[in-house]
Length: 183
Image (cartoon, rainbow, N blue to C red; front, side, top):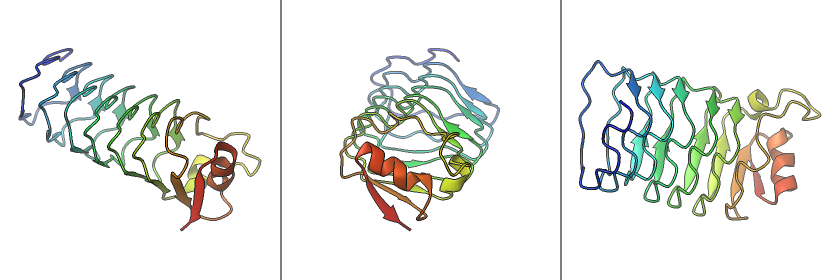
């Protein structure tokens, strides 16, 4: 539930039973010793800030998760790897903000929108691979682009955005000073 273990700085592990459907708002907020947690396949929702500031080093968000709130993994400075659910349609605002150890991210074709500051301040982020960039930019003129202009603000300018050639990821990279790589 909400704030269940917030700021339990000595909490190192936690096991969820099979009946959990939601990890509540700020449930593990500031749990700096929590490096690993297995999210059960019964979970459909990761509520706002549920792991904000936790000590996580890697996370697997199961395909049963269909909604992630904002700032879910914000300030998880040790988070290096993420396997993200294929049930989620968008990466919400500031989800990975200041995840300064995150090196790469795979945007599966189910993800149709990257919201404001989703990867803001991810200074170690080297590459973001888009499985289907056309899924995110359905119009050739970009008028219905579904990526916020500041999604990657504060990231290193050597960040590679990897997608099919001729998609709007290419023009986005050029407009925002990132490297485009055709896959």
